[in-house]
Length: 121
Length: 237
Image (cartoon, rainbow over the protein chains, first blue to last red):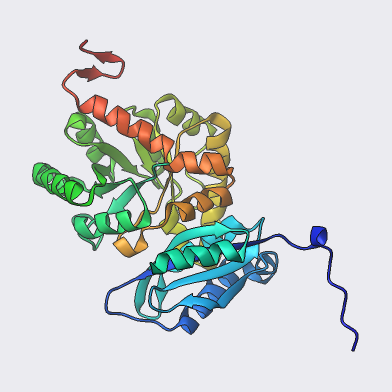
């Protein structure tokens, strides 16, 4: 089957990557799946289906750091503050109380990966 | 840029966290300082509380301020009389008479959630103008949005947006706070500034509500608590 031609760069959506850290209660742990479902539920509750569709939100599962509880979400460049606010609305994951700290907002995945590398050190 | 969260409750008021837990979390979130809010029943113990704040302040290298919140006119009168003995004076919004009295009183620093448990926004153009005249900041509390849902949340957001529009129009000072009752409810300054943008501020104004406005208030508090200060506009040179 013939593949669809990709959009030219000027017509593609501008992406932003937001790295965040989940600060949680000591001794309590949570799986990544809980966080992903909490993100989607909170965003759908707050912005609604139509609102979420305008964010181009994606949780990047591969960049999740289990040990340091650092994750990355992707959105379009005009919705950065909406996504940051949505992340701030998450206060619990099951029985674990959490709060989220925003580490970096970047336009390239490379820079975000560099930030994650620096955190490791 | 230094960010401040001006409304946090400890276990000594309606909260559940210790001063140390709050200071630790503030440091982790990158805040430069927080104001801890107490009720009038702790007024007699204010010296012990202040000593504790100073000790924690040194340990975590973070600014901690002590504020008292008036919940009715009687408490407000009492706290206005003793204004020089603590840092910030808050008034619990919601009651229309108390909202009006708060914006008419120059000793008041912050009117907290004026729309609290109301069917309207709790403020009108006259009250907002008075707040500007008397330099009373209007608070926009993130916790109200975080802890509610569905119809209640949408009504609160509607009222907050209206209050924000009035404050912007008349140039009334604005502060955005987490209103946390536990250190787990404290928020990253970026989250709080995003909340300001949601309510109609631009990025610069949203950051100003977390940084410049609280810093101006802190400067005024320091002046007021110095021995040289007599009353607004009058001090010993």
